[in-house]
Image (tube, rainbow, N blue to C red; front, side, top):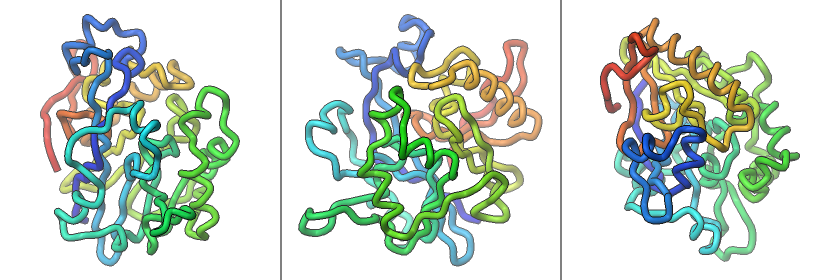
Amino acid sequence: MNLYSIETGRFKLDGGAMFGVVPKSIWNKLNPADENNMISLAMRCLLIEDGNRLILIDNGMGNKQDDKFFGHYYMHGDFTLEKSLAAHGFSVNDITDMVLTHLHFDHCGGSIKWNNDRTKYETTFKNATYWIADAHWQEAIAPNPREKASFLKENILPIEESGQLKLLKAGEKFHNDIDLLYTIGHTNNMMHPIVPYKDTKLIYLADVIPTMAHIPTPYVMGYDVRPLDTMKEKVSILNTAAENNYLLYFEHDPFNEMCSVHQTEKGVRVNEILTI
């Protein structure tokens, strides 16, 4: 397998919301806020090349929303999904498998785009199967009030209408060599691929540990639907990674792509900062 980091763009969210109960006097040193209390975040996806399969995990926010929508999130930087794929010699039409960890707009918005005359939506990845956890799909199409603003129907329903959707039941996999871990703290049944990489494995963290700064147990986002479960899930993932020398891959960290971890007297902490 060949792995590639795919940056799809940068955006901003409220720093307090990103760090929950952690005081600004602490988190502001880790990711400094602007005058509006907003912090810069990556939308970093992962591309897996394996024989005749080209697998993309998550796809960022996309570009089909209107200016008012994007105005809330302060899009910035030069990264796009298309540019990042092209840098490795690929295009959206080469993707055979589009794996979505969950259906919040900053992870799946690139799944769907306008057609040429902007009269209807169509799938961005024409030749791909879209893989989503069945239990999560059911939550997304009938969202709870807390998450409703993050589950946008234009990002979700056209996938089903295209005929390219494949829902994964518990215990099923989209690739024989890629294991799947599920968490419920951030959103119900968020899917985390565990990917073979060199002589170890890489855990795609999505939003359970969105940045390296979120490794300490209490550092949990205010967006999470079950923060106490997030804390338990983080401890389990971090202990597993430390015991097995697995690598952690960060989707939202604006500075760090991935790291190894080890046990310390304060718990699991960063050992070495790495890149693909």
